[in-house]
Length: 422
Image 1 (spheres, rainbow, N blue to C red):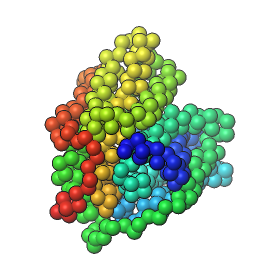
Image 2 (cartoon, rainbow, N blue to C red):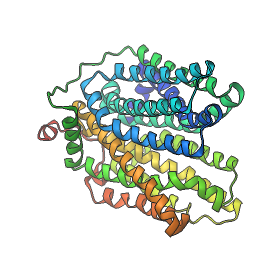
Image 3 (cartoon, rainbow, N blue to C red):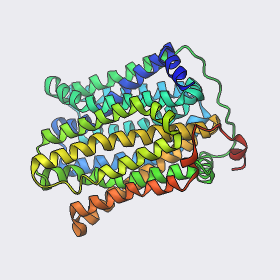
Image 4 (spheres, rainbow, N blue to C red):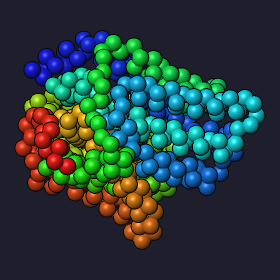
């Protein structure tokens, strides 16, 4: 059945158009994330402090939009919402190119664009997760999510390098203009999909804040979704530590070159791409719940290689290479499985709010992790802080083992009655 689903999905012309556009979107997202700070320095004279403000604004924008993004996705047709998000991101990025051409580009302009694009990207991701089950059919969620993860891995491996080439050859503002074209291409691909989308089933007179709260309650009252959310939170807080300290640790403690660090990040994308390809087979062999639990365990265990890396540069590079390859592979196995179980267990009318709640939780604890890393690196040392981060990521595994997730052989059907009681 699963093999037939995979074959039929690969032959579905609408899905082929969708995944091509999703790949372009992932490229654009990575180019934006890496490129806007670089262009802020090169074209707008941003300082290190300015870049700190930019990173903080990215977290704030994601936190603010995550809960309401779910409400918007449940109240709207999702495909037009995705197209609108792509067009808005393209227009915002083109303003940078235009302002630079007029000689009026300032850091404040770039800061505003970065915050808005970050928020709209969160809205796109939440709406996309809600769109996918009805678009492909719930019986094809495993191969569909694996394809989306593969698209994300392509963006991770290719986006930063492509951004560097564009900035080097065309200049920063024009490179951002080219980046805007990726979002236009994504909007075009979504517009070419022929299948019709039904009107949203969700109707409520409640305020957006109350509906967002209802999504969070539904998430944490559900016996299957709650441990998945806790696992995501533990991985996100540990990931916040790594986001804050990884590059500093690799450069200063292990004395790796920027080129080596770029190679490590690319290796992580390769590991994620390979895992996305095999994740449906692993889920069929082990069962959906055991497969994602195994992915979480692999992710947590190999992150231990980072704080235990020796100071010899070659050995350190090999330790971190293994951590990137197998850690991103394990994280992808978990991520695909978590998305499949969450989408399968949630009725369509609740998908946006439940997904938005997961994103909000991940962003909150990720920001807490990054802040805690800055505080603890002084008292524990960078290695000690990263060791604590690995422990937090590994702590997700017991929550999965002691929950219904471990016994979930196949994706469940949504229980509308349970959500109606929220």
